[in-house]
Image 1 (tube, rainbow, N blue to C red):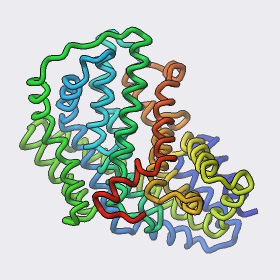
Image 2: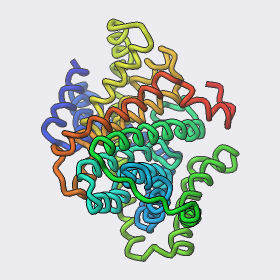
Image 3: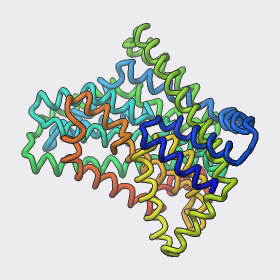
Length: 430
């Protein structure tokens, strides 16, 4: 009965339009009161969930991404992408995919990515004659690569939700190949739609322009290399790398590019504080939710239900993907990771999937949810920038969804995409 109350109140609050964090917290409170547990349990679980040293990486990575967003780094990355692939059919669409991937590497946030790239690329594409729905779909889907990049704070959240079963360094290394696969799939989708609609190709300005724009963008892109080199070599931890990312970004935007103003710095700081507050609130209430799920053995019950459907690993992985996709349409990325990891990670590991590989599966699924109503944060931002309705965008979204699902299937059923680099660079034994 307690589990029914937990699930019914949670989905009931979501249907009523209650924000995810409050829906999680209120459903947990209702269950605790029904169970007759002391109310102090609520605050104990919330504090224990948030009071973890490794979570210091989250505000640092968020702040670094906001500084990149407000510090003028996006323009230089866009110019590099245009010079690289702008001469291909549908050149601005291809440039958009590459630019979103590169900026996702330095921001680590799909929402920051679509905000920065969308503000530059969507108006530019509309001006050049590209349809608005195409411009928005390319931007919102390509921006999801940021969830897999070394600066992604969602990797930190997953590592801690996994209960110490996975190394943050291994996760950071593991995300590079899936990010590349996702970018290639998006390039194929953008090109196919551009050919079908007859979009023009741009003009190649020569390798001298490519190298000139690369030199301008390289200091910003270097943050990815610094984080990777530092963590993989053991010079600093993930938390220390996040602090170094902030320091480097401040020096870059103030003294190298000289594009940061005091007003934009304060705006970036305010946005980082707001985002961090939301994430920590989600972590706190999700810890309370996880406590109840552990108490009622939800993971064991879910495993038993799946085993009744099939005992084949490929089928179990497919079921997990479908469930995560459905939940991701209603829940924020961080909340989905925190709630679903303790349930599905043991099931996936029992079926033979490595926890690092499952982390990539989880991140891509959650990123897909960011582009699916009714939550669909990146989609809402992209539509707002493009001045188009969500419904109009959804009518032509299928090729881009297909690209995302193709990347998800590669990561789900080909372990090497996730595990080759951690094994090569870190000697990972998983």
